[in-house]
Image (tube, rainbow, N blue to C red; front, side, top):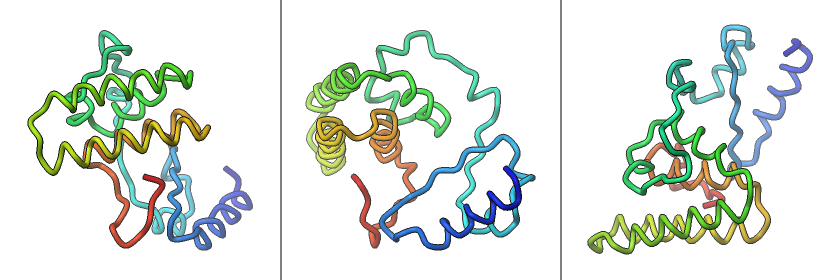
Length: 151
């Protein structure tokens, strides 16, 4: 990214509404302006982890998502490119959650999955919806309770 492009990005970062989140992905963070890096929450994803592929990308269980790392969630979100397949996946996960003992956490997870289904039906980007839901389920979301979020 050129320096002028980074300065434009910096302006966007400085003026982002409080209810928005921007996700920046780079393999060369050392080439970013220090002012950009200082305004970001950094999550390192190792190259080896991002190249791993589980045996089956169709059969993701709720427990696998609950314990997934950031890189695994990004991979899972990328597997479902078609809206009907993503909706089917969330419905299967909902069925799994309903088999778990009732608790505040299962209620919260059910609400997240239902919100994800609602967003998919509203034509929101499939990958971003899945990643947002799965990050929240795995407890990796950086959204603060003081800021509203899509979910």
